[in-house]
Amino acid sequence: METETYAGSNNDNRREPRENTNTKTKLLCTFVSKRKLCVVCNRIMDNFDVDRNRIFVLKDKNIDPDRYILTYNIVVDLTKDKEQHHKIIPNTIPINRKKEFNCLYTIDALNAIIIEQTGEANKGADVKWEKFADCLLVARKDGELVVVETELESIQIF
View 1: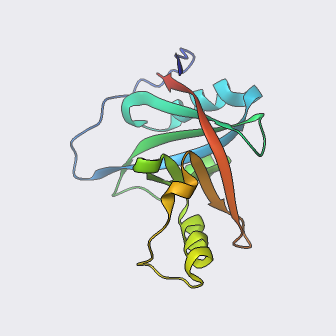
View 2: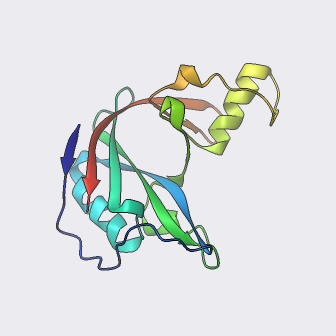
């Protein structure tokens, strides 16, 4: 694992996690080309309060090897959050994480898996997460499940 630091960002509002009942963290995922990696990382840091000032850079192992997947937690104010992250940083989606299997997924992908495994939408269904270790799971607009095998490229610390 390689750790790099970019000094090009000028966000003076970065801080360690806060103990504030009006805030929570939200896990986001941004898709970016290798060519735009530095620019997008700096833009993320300039526009969000990134928890622990870290961005995880994952390599797409099977679909597009020139694409990177950035994951990071932002601290959001519950009184102000309006889900505008995709407008600030293009190609950004909210995701969830199944820590035991290092699996990242969208809610739509989770629903697609449940339907695939049980034949119906069922909130109480058990998902066989081991099949999706080290993957990002997203669903296309038509509901088709897309499984992207990932590998940690680096952790960007600002």
